[in-house]
Image (cartoon, rainbow, N blue to C red):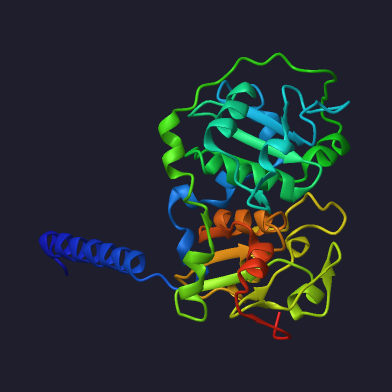
Length: 315
């Protein structure tokens, strides 16, 4: 018969061994699934459902933003949703389209929409890249509580949820100017990418069409010579439901798409033609807990700088 003292020692040893296993698993993760173990990287923090929003719509810190081209509210909107003008996010710098706007103008536009430093911002739009473009832009101001509404307004309406018309009453928010110090965090430029092309530690995601990726297609009449060295193709549409292009596929399916293209521990850099479609790919990679950036200027910048490209290849 085992004594009480011996039994206690056995329990204590088992507890210490279990703790060691936990520490070991934390120190030596494997695969992409293990890269999103921290609470800040939880998928549900970045992607919310219509059910979640309906339950939290009246929370004092929740701000719902609907990205529209002119900043005017749609005829039908989610209650309390404030229209955010996409034109604020679509700046041109040195002839390159869709560069991040000046931090001050972006911050003022967000404050006018009622966004404050600690707001839980929920974003939707008529196209996913428009919504994720705003999410990236707000991240550049240092805001952290940012989420995409999966399914958007079409799913909300289809479920018979309450809607409103007209412009909502909005109280201006306050965002610390110091937040703009981190505006470069989600993006990289050619000077950052060039010395890393073809090296370990970088996984490039080309989110353009197959023709653009292979060098057999074009965009807006501009032919593509191919993709950046080492880039894998992942069209943004592949991450969304075919019946509702605003509805993200299940997390497990999204993670599988990136596991096929990203080495564990790599920095993920997404790009497209000018940086519009790559917003969606950047956002999903971020939601999955990956260290993701977006190439500001994308292929348009690459073309101007004559960076090396490769035709054909494996998507």
